[in-house]
Amino acid sequence: MFGLLLAKFYYIIWIFITPFLPFIYFYRLILKKEELNKIKEKFGFNSNKYKNSNLIWINAASLGEARSAIPLIKELLTYNVKILFTTVTVTSAKHVRSILKDINSDNICHQYAPIDHPIVINIFLNNWKPKSIIFIESEIWPNIIINSHYRKIPLILIQGRMSLNTYKKWIVLKSFAKYIFKKFNLIIAQDNKNYMRYKNIGAVNIAKEINLKNSVNAPKMSYSKKSSLTKNINKKFIIVFASIHDNIEEEAAILSHKKLKKIKHNLLTIIVPRYPQKISNILKLGVKNNLNINLRSSKKPSKTITDIYVADTIGELGTFYEIADICFIGGSLAQKGGHNLIEPAFEKCAIIFGPDVSNHISTAEILLNNKAAIQIKNTNELIAELTSLCKNNNEVNKLKNKAFKLVKDMPSPVKEILDILKPILKL
Image (cartoon, rainbow, N blue to C red; front, side):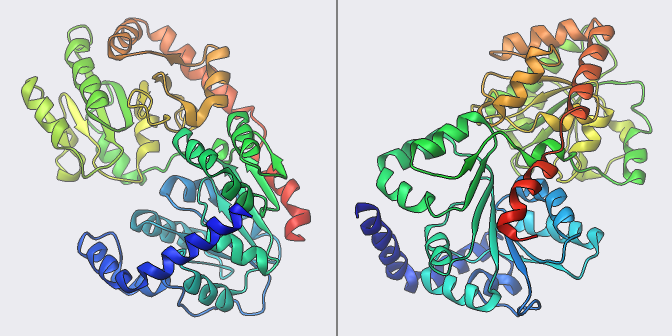
């Protein structure tokens, strides 16, 4: 009963903020967080090109979640279904549109996900009439869930992930959590930790330890761009700091290079910031430590790269893994849960990560148990491990090959998930 009351309260909040929505989205347009010609999609309006069809609605919030869904989408398209693929951010939307061009199917289209306003959700569901809904990873919108459940539309959450902070909030509102999560026909948790979190807040019909990200390579640049980049750095020893988040990881990258170049004179450090627009601190640290820094966005020829190369672009991380000898996985020193560990393994790149890999616990354990990666506790340990590896190419190659073999031998998560989904989706 209390869960139902909280759901009603959530509904009322949305009704209350309705008059302010135009101002909110005008401000977001100014910040370039929205596309003017796509705003209507956020409010549920768009033409439905798949009327009266077997439509599956798949929703992914971020770029990483959207990319991880692509292998599953390709498999689903082999069945007689239509797919509406929605994302939330401008970055993910632009990237998904380019991917869908490559897929080149008339049976899938993209638009922005509707906001969770009860009136908007009614407009959206009345227009599209999906036969089933698949959420990717961590997108939980109560009005969508409640309204869809009322319409008897099957609800599925794939590679479910719940951060510790989110889990704590749901525990405080456990009756509301139980009211919401019991409406899912299926939740596939990406590991045992997340399985237990969903179970503890009252979810049912949970499967565990299947992660779509285990089958996806990181995006790469074109062959011509790669050739241009690597033309003058083939003899460099390359370390990539991938998806780094904050001052701690930025300083770790700069300090590592400053110390390591004393023993590895052909060293090149490539820094791939998690948010390409936030590079001011990296530039300041470079100047402070007398290091030459080149930005990828400057499009200077690769011969000008001497110390630090900042990849302030998106959609190219796979290539940087491919040309690197060693990578450090960001978000693991910054206490953000760490980023994908499978992607560098696919590219035969030796892997180092920090203490917080809570987003990828199972993968981290597999790599560590097989001595296919190195975990460090702090920046000093990171520099020490990098120093050791810079002096031992054989150990670098062992790490590369072990990690590559492990990921190549992993079972296909897409096949596992499809086998579970077929009865629900009536494929």
